[in-house]
Length: 109
Image (cartoon, rainbow, N blue to C red; front, side, top):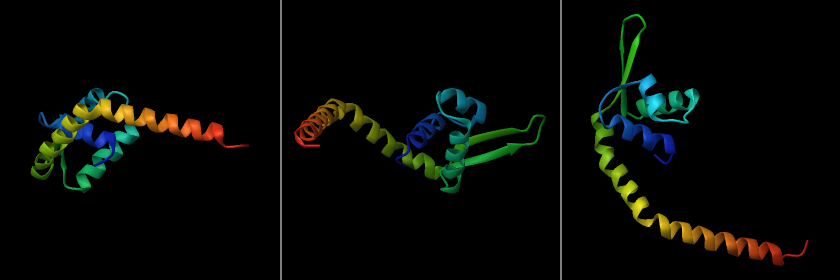
């Protein structure tokens, strides 16, 4: 669940089933390999279903399973928390980085 692509894929599928190509466009920046791996992992975990419609070309749709849908409120809560606390996290990171930089400057080589 901690992978960035997992949360983005679950959010993208919250609006309903989508084809691979649509997901690829929605998730700008995801490589084909990463998208395929993430979808397989989510399918294996029971969060996403994959349905194949025999046609030319073959149509493959991905959708959230009931288990995947049950995860959406949790994902939304994490997103809301992150948006509410992003400034505090940024300050904490800056403080940490400044402390680390200062300590490194004081350490003799």
